[in-house]
Length: 479
Image 1 (tube, rainbow, N blue to C red):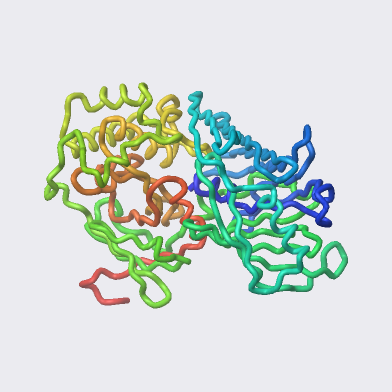
Image 2: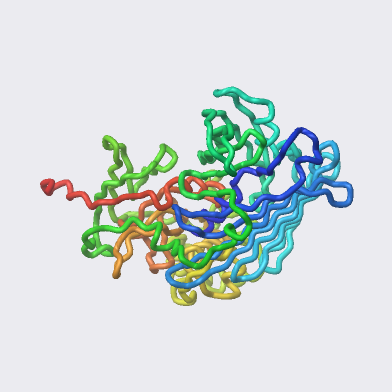
């Protein structure tokens, strides 16, 4: 879940205060308090400055949260430089977490953008098409409201995110014009809805007629609110993101790890993108709620494929990414050390799952995780367990991908907690959970997203907004 929350921060619209259409009047800074499901979690400085002939947009965000009682700090910094005509020149961003610093440096050169990523001590460089992003995208709200748009008007924009190596496009719509009191003065405020293409994430913004953004609410869970600097910075480690976003249950579930099947009633803002139906689970609409049904997969009925895997439908899940460096010699060497001469895909998956579980120390940490870093540290939570497993699986020649959703956890506060695990290809896709040493994930795993971090962003609207009740088995009467 932590990586999804991190992505939500990057999805905040680039908004800067402005007083007129003169570029010099856009210069300045604004402070914002950051809230997660109503609780203070951090603060952000957004600014536009002139530096050495360029216009520079800066976002400087800091988080103070708790994960299962462990205090965590995270710092996210972004600097975007534009030419006098608004053309994008460069992007520099850093993410500082308990594990260190990840850096991303992008520079426009002609019709190409060169992106250098430095993650876990490893540097990689790629060339991508020049983004469409301009200064107008960074100050879009401030410019737009000065034009007095009407309800129903729309505005398209794009922004390049180095961490995801892609340009994200979206559209904003004027929902309403409202009269609000701002700094003691009655002010016209525009209510704007922004939708990011391909991700299904919506943001509701309130922007004053002078161009000042008063508040952004991302997917109903993360709020960025304009505040005086001293109030914005007034934040402590009160928000435990693990517990506060769980779907707790009134009565514990019996034998959660050994059950053959499970039926649940889910109440949440789910869309068609969250309704995964496969051999293990199904999620169907049931009035205003959703019925989740799952059963244990019998691996004895599977016919595992032998390596090498050559199926064109799945081989792309062998490729390395900036965060799953499956071509790195360290990961390749460790993977082959673990599996030896084994060629049976299911046995390979089982060996890797067992090794990751036994050798990775369980800790909670708000890290921007990658497989190579976890191999070096050999510690972490479900994110670290799964991403290391996936990195080793791909390095061994076994297609694997990330899966995210919820899983039932026993204890003082039993309930369904946001979780990450893996899927591997053994002739068919099976769910594997190395955090619990489950070669086949148990029936309490509720899959709501799969794929890379970009795909997992679809979880953002669900975090902290899920209610779950156990439903009777099909052969039992309703209580």
